[in-house]
Structure formats: structure tokens, C-alpha cells
Length: 501
Image 1 (cartoon, rainbow, N blue to C red):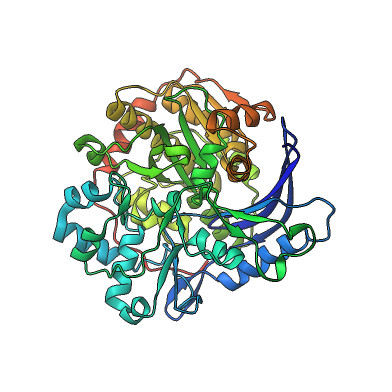
Image 2 (spheres, rainbow, N blue to C red):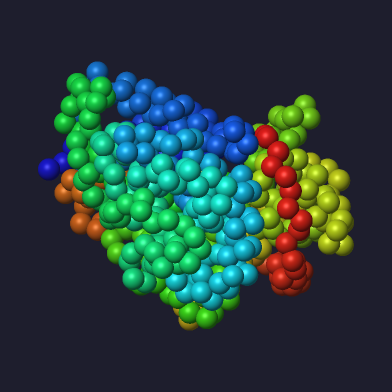
């Protein structure tokens, strides 16, 4: 059967949108129904997400389709990773979910490393050791708010909080769970022994379901009109996993970069890669679609530039991203670099001031202008991608032959060109809408429209205009890489108190 329409709800850590995606048997057609902001705020002493506000936007966007003449066949939600909601016995949230940027995870993260060591933590899960991981948030809950866990009957990863509201489902989707650092990727189950060792209760851990699982019909007031027959189908719930499905990869070892607030850069593998070397270079094994593993690294992506932009707006000048890129392009490259993954850049606040202080403390020229700050950030991201390419090549024994950038960051011409220059690899950019396309395509596959990732990517590539970048000859990248790696080997900067944006 052809002529299907599904709804892809995509929630990022900055914004969300509801999109209808139609497929006529050969081509996709996307229509963004609504867009809305998603910003955590400080409540009850913690940085929290406003789930009720997000749900009001989602339900309004979906509900507006009821009067359309086109039946909606399925609905699915993807979100950022690691965050979760705790539901009580009545299926209601115990309280507002806490954002991974809150900072409360850092002491448990450090304590877990001291108590068990990196070998035990990585070996039990195969996941990159980062303070933002769900595991350390659960440790924070167990220490600071044990009543929160005691009241919880079910833990749901963030996309499944909304799938529950859409269908009543109480399962968590595999790719979202795989970001948690609490799931044994090799064994395919929750790492309950590890949780026990760290004092985290396990009674609330849900069943884990594969992407493409039909969890039931749309229920409640939304199930009317054109929505009356809609199914709720789990897409790859982690937005990056959906984006990777939507990346038109043509080489089995091709590197993808899902570029947005975070940059997730990696390759697809048929099984987890959990070795001494993968641990040493801190690669993560996250779940993918159709039995694949996403061997990747989380890099602090455009978040730093986003926070700079917010700070400059607070100071009186609202720059667009193209304006910032143009200012950066006028500056000399590789003058000053930062380690984007330093903890000092994790939390909201005056990011330009942090960048200047970081450069001063590490002996680099202090960027004095808006363009110089932006160039410092963009150069540093390109160097981060170079490191990922080198590390993945060492771990899998094959150097990726090309880079595919998808998502919002694929529109960033300067960053894309500098990525080609830094890695020495050809770069292809697009589609911008890879996440929505991947989300929708997995729903459509569950409805019988596709037979696996290869067919999906072929259809997406047929309807996408790619922009290519060729590495430019130039000096300075190898020397800059040495300086960059020296930064990465230094102890993290002192923690910064959270500052409301």
C-alpha cells in the first residue's frame, strides 16, 4: 500500500516541532505543522523541563490535524537523550523531570569513578563516561530525593513520557534507553548489578522495546476525525538515532555527524565495540535501528555558539547564525582553541566570558571581538570532529572515507568547510530534516512501506539536494590538533554554577 501520512514529533533541547510526513511510494513530503520553544527553568532548586507546556504544544499541533481530509496512519516522538520522567502508580509524573544540564550529576559521576573506576563503568555498559548520563542522575535522585524514586512505579525515557500520554504505553524505546549509561549494550538488558552497586533502586525499570514497535492506538481526546485510526509507533526515540536513519550514508564506514545543540559523530557497526581502546578514547555504543549500533562520541556541538548568541542578545545585539558565521569567516583561523567538552561549557550562562577566561588560562590569545569568539568555537568544533575520525579509525581499523553532516548544523557553511579541512575528508551536507525523516521512515517501515534502512536511505537520498565540501589545502591543522589534544588531556576546569539563560 502507498500513500501514507505519519506525524513525527521532534523535541530538541532548545525547540520542538510537529511535522507531517507523507510518502507516495517514491518520495517524501514534509509539512511542519507547528514549532515551539523548549527551555528548562529553575524550579524547586533544580533545572527542570516543563512537560505540561511541551504536551500542550504537541497536542495542539497533532489535534489540529483532526479536521484534515488526510487520515493520519501513525504518530511517533523523538527527543534528546539521557533525561527521563518518573511515573507513579496512577501514571502521573512524580514531579517535573530534571534537565541533564542541572549540574547535580557531577558529584555522583566523580564518586562513581572513584568507587568503581572507568573500567567497571564502561565495561558494564559500553557507553561514553559523561556526567550527563542517566545513571548519575539516578544516583543524584537516590542521594538527594529518595522519596522521588520511592514514589516511582515506572521510569520512562523522555520520548516515552509522551508516547505514554498518546497511547498509555509504559515501555521505553531502545535507542533512548541506550543513552542512559544504565543499560548493558552487549547483553541487551538493564545493567541492574551496576545500579545495585551504586545504590540505585531498579524496581521502576521498564520493558525495553525496539524502534518500529506499535504500542497501540492513539487514545483520548486526540483520537478523532483524521486521527481516529492512528497508531502510536515508536521511532528511534533518541533524536540522533532518527537522524542517522535519515542520513543518506552510502559507505558502510562513512562517518555521520548529527549536528545541532550536540554534535554526535560516529559510524554504524553491527555489534557493540567494547575494548580497551574504545574505552581509552571514550567512544560510546548507542542503539540504532534494525539491530545496528551507533559507535560515536558526543561532542558539545552548537550549544556553545547558541549560548554566546543568547548572551550577546542579553547585552543588546541579536545576531543571526549566518551573521555570526560571516563575522567568524573574516577572522584568522586557529588562533585560539578551546576544548568544547570541558565541563565549564556545559551549563547555561555568559559563554563568551567563559571562552575568554578559558583562553587566558590556557595561554591562548583572548578573542576580543564577536567574530573572534565565534571563530574560536567553530575551529574547535572542527578539531573535535578530526579527533573523532582519528579515534574511530584506530578502534575499527578503517578510516572513514567521507563525512555526512545532517540536521540543523548542516546549513553551517563555514563549519562544514572547516570540517572538511580539519579531517581531510570530503563532506556532504543534508538533509536538514534528517531527524523528522528518520522518525517518519521507521514508522512507515512498521506500516509496511520499507524493508530496512537501505530502502529508507535510497528514498531519502532521491529527494535530497546535497551540498558538498572538498578539503582545502592549508597549513596549521596538525599543529592546531597538537594544541587541541593538549587541552583535552588537562584536568577539567572548575565547575561553573548554573546560570539561567
